[in-house]
Amino acid sequence: MMSVPNTQKTVAFFDVDGTLLKSTIVHCYIWMRSLQLPFFFKHLWLIGFLPKIVYYLILDRISRTRFNQVFYRNYRGLEVAEMKALSTEMFEAYIRPKIFSEAVSQIQEHQEQGTAIVLVTGSLDFVVQPIADYLAVDAVLAPQLREQGGQFTGELTTAPLIGAEKAEAIRDYADRHEVSLEASYAYGDSQSDLPMLECVGNPIVVNPGKSFRQKALKSGWEMHEWL
Picture 1 (cartoon, rainbow, N blue to C red):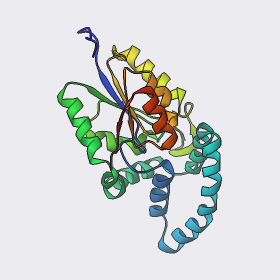
Picture 2: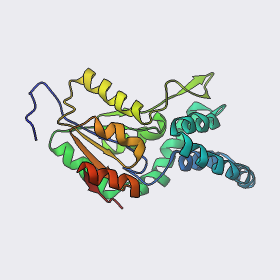
Picture 3: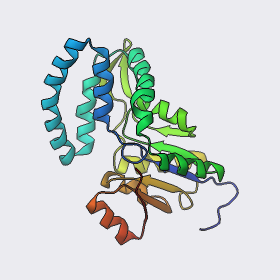
Picture 4: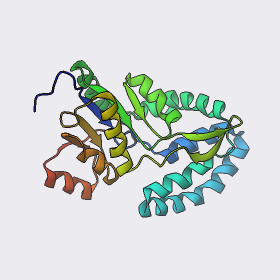
């Protein structure tokens, strides 16, 4: 590995869903939303929501950016304070058991070597924050929902953090914090993480699908299977 000037830092950038843990933004929303409802209404809500999942799956295949924009509209009208409290509860009951133990070990290894840890994700900031606290990471790059009158509007404050937007966020972070991207690491699991992986000197692919595995093999990238 190339030597790094003393003034520059090294960072390990981690995608979250599919890389650090086995979950999606859909699973997290369903968990929190259903917890808000009485037992009877919960089942009625689920029956009404399930048909939307097919639409979301199709939209995600067409454009993950558009999928994120459309899906996050489900948060419109929900109380900010309540959802943030639910995200903490969700971490203990749902998210924490789904974090890959190998991911935790890898993060700890980086931390022992003095490498900063930054989560880069399309998941909402308040959903990811309990994960960041648990792993003692240095920063989180994640989208935020607009708030009005103590409620979410369902609109993001910025473009979804997907694809090229992840790479741009990483470059911006590197510029602001004097980070050597050539000496840094990035961990991702899917095609949407490709720009993020390509902007660092040490790209690492985790749990790739068939086509992304071929891309990683062709590029000579390091690969891991985390269970």
